[in-house]
Image 1 (cartoon, rainbow, N blue to C red):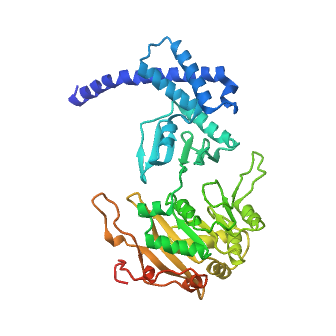
Image 2: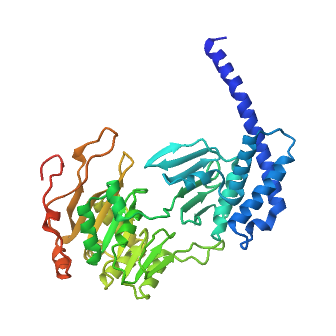
Image 3: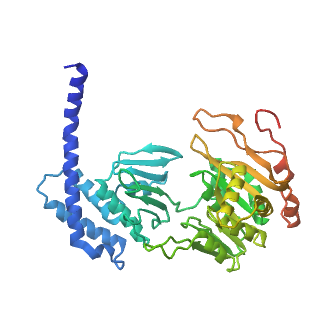
Length: 451
């Protein structure tokens, strides 16, 4: 027998007791969990009982059930079982600790024993796990049931929300190979303000002042970027610049925006039911919003035929509208808008669509998640109009990548002005919104050559 084989046997012998003990505890967990559900039953869903009373009742019953176990358990093991089962019954099992952790922004369950989280923009594996696939399914069923939804073989994927507003996506077999998958994008209890984005380096004070002037001046703004780039957070900050005396209508797939103004109407789309009926799409809500006397329309994300209705709203007196689009650059955002307008079913020539876009949208704010995990605004681009069949764009601010990385691997760069004053500056001036000239003062940006 080789030395390596002997070492492997020794390691296996050392690990076996711990693995075996964990298996015993898991069996006790399943058994007591099932017994607890049988004993308390409807009491777990009685809304007249406060959460503290219910938690005390669950913990008391758990102590009684554990005390009857024939298997000898240490005080630490008993405490762990009580915590785990309480989290399962009253919360979301092993996910609870991640949901409580403010450093974690996303939770990804690839399998019952494979859970990843995003912390400070970086993915990392965790040691937490569900007992088995059935345990994971129970948690998924609990989440979707709380918002009046269902997930089964006939409806194998669903978007839902936790009670705190965190966005949840679940998908199960037969669509998900290898078992159920769960993704949770956490909802900040205290939404980020512009000061937070400045401190994170997402934008500079100069850029913040410029964007605030654009929103107050009722320019139509599109925020674009990839998945997880922070578009919704930036949209929320931009929306906070809207004056409090205006009526705001927000339209989203799942409510995420947290506006602090007094006069805010929130609309949320609804998927079709099990019979394929009752769907209310974003496009339907955009049309309905036009009848609600809005001063501003804020669409969480444009991803389909509603792009045409949004552009028409912008072109027919609803200035100051804001929305987000998935795109890799400002130019790509325009291509995406063209494609989505065609998805509306209207057979419009490309030139007519581009004229609609160029006259409707004033500014594109592009945001990206960089490889160091930070989220930065990289482009602020003005739409200047049409030249022939092409929409002309002009970068007003760009992120300076030439500054390199610091000793921690973070980008040193920041947004810098290209030295070009936007065409809409006079419009802002006419509205009494003045911007200091130094905002547009030329700053060097490395594009491989000097500007």
